[in-house]
Length: 116
Image (cartoon, rainbow, N blue to C red; front, top):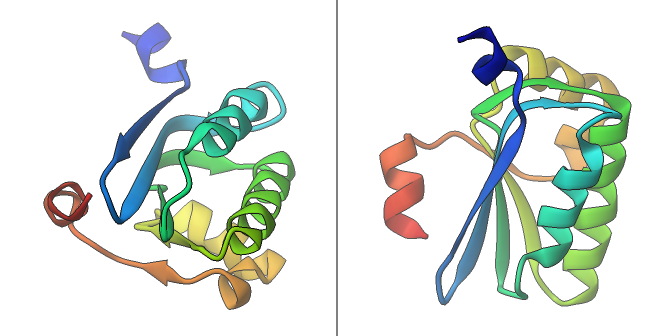
């Protein structure tokens, strides 16, 4: 069971209005390439949502990926929104100032799925 807990993966859901990227696990130097690839592979939509509810750790590499994704999405005329960061990730967002430049919303997972 421990092996499954340590794996990192990203799920992506696409609708007409938004794309939801849902990373699961630890976003660090070892996994950031897969995280960044999922962000870059997201088709252009008005909104790119990153559901952080199952991220156990967000390192500086993950923060840089989010900043780059925000710039990329804004260049296309869209908006990056972070959804449901757990307390450990919330602290990183506050400490880095990312929370001030990227909207953070709290939504029940069912609502996230229903709107995507």
